[in-house]
Amino acid sequence: MPFSSTLAAIDDWLAEHAPLTWRDLAPPATGSELGAVRAHLGVDLLPDVEALLRWHNGAGRHRPPYCLAPGYAFLGTADMIALARKRIAADEGRLLWRTWNPRWLPVAADGRGRCLAVDHAEDGRAEVTVSSEDDGDGAPKTWPDLGNLLSKTYEAMRYGSRLMGRRRVVTDGRLDWDDA
Image (cartoon, rainbow, N blue to C red; front, top):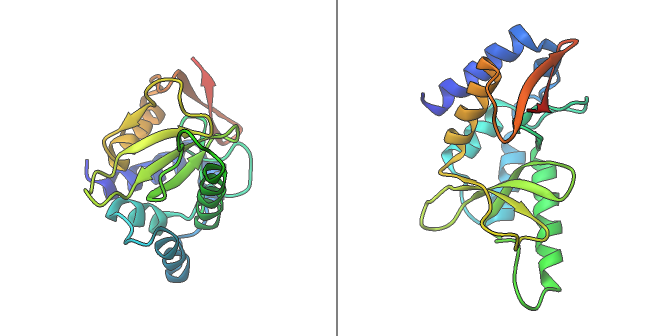
């Protein structure tokens, strides 16, 4: 399914099954907000990342937030930049290894130090990686691109299937993910 179709399908599913989560999604990012992310990265945004931010600029303020993957709340542009800067600063004091690449853009976070980062590398990989502040516990979970990840999230939302050890639940009009 094309990326724009996946985003539309997520919107439609949320509007029908989790309307409070859907209403809480932020409006699309403005041109200046997108420009701030580009300036931070020093490169153009990948088309899927720009499409994601033109769809909605984050999850909103209510709990539970909309998650791009189970447990990973969708960040708005300001939070993406702030988290990336925090991770870059944390790496400055490390002598042996780095846990962050300056061309990564965090698009979602779990609130416990892990995030989903989209690689804006020059080779155009666009891989999505689960990154943590203490990477080193083996190979991290990855997806080939943002479209692949959101397609899997949509399928798990729609069919109630398991993803990343969780299943969707809808309570009082809000989408959440419980351990499966």
